Image (tube, rainbow, N blue to C red):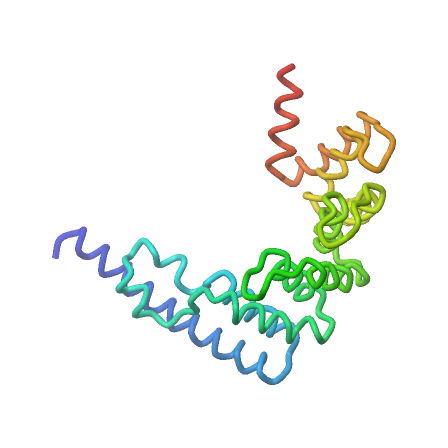
Length: 211
């Protein structure tokens, strides 16, 4: 057996072994989700949203990927599981369900419902939801445009260490969106985001350093 054939067979064997482990994990997750476990419902929704179980096998060919027991991407099922989890108050699911409504993934696009679910997660102090709801206020999507409210929400998320919010708050200070323009504060928040390797902040600081 030549080396190339051996490596191909080894790769297939590893993929098959991984698929068995993954299938068991999904089976356990499904059981927990069906029993009403909010976190499991969220994780199962995430698996359907991402199409977990087949992404890493794409390079091996469609036939092999389809033969393996994975979860195919299905936004409708993802939204259904997010809904079940969100209704139990799980903030991550509330935020993801809001995203589904804002983008029309798995549900009919509805900005008002998206904002409602973001607000529920925001009330629990969930930083990603604070950031996303701030975007809604900044752009007037599903709510009346309000730069002050957007800046306030970005501030709350930024203080929790969410890099996107840190960058967006930097933009607020740089451009005077909802706050008094302050380039020193803008740079401080850009730096915090860059330290977490948030790409837009890294690129922006690199451009400043080249001036």
